[in-house]
Image (cartoon, rainbow, N blue to C red):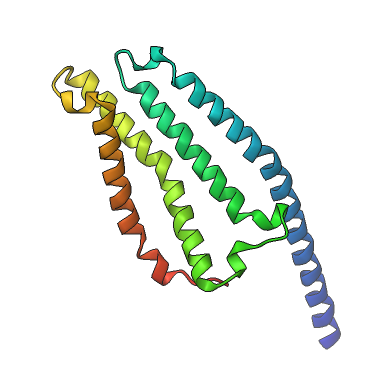
Length: 168
């Protein structure tokens, strides 16, 4: 039975190592394509939505600019989390506090786009169902303050994860 256990453990260990290498290679090639393509796409969307045509009557251009910026931030944190695939550095292994802080920033970055899309949906709903009643949301400055307030609230809510995340 000891021989069988050694053979089985060796086989399981071999497949575990094989799949780990395979997943790292897939992750490398996918991210090597997705991060530059996503960054260029979002920067081109940012250029398109800065034109005056998107700011004439609605806030669509402003929301799409915010989405492009948040997607670029998310891609930056994706590169930061997977830096060991591209560069000889691993930010997660420096210290436990560094790992926790990077995970905290990553969670915030992942929540930026859904937060902007939710506010965008509420803005569109208010503009369609109650046209002209919510003049407050017509100015980009007020929308930006609303986004920053919700972002601050989100940062405060997610801060609890700093104390409970345990790195391996």
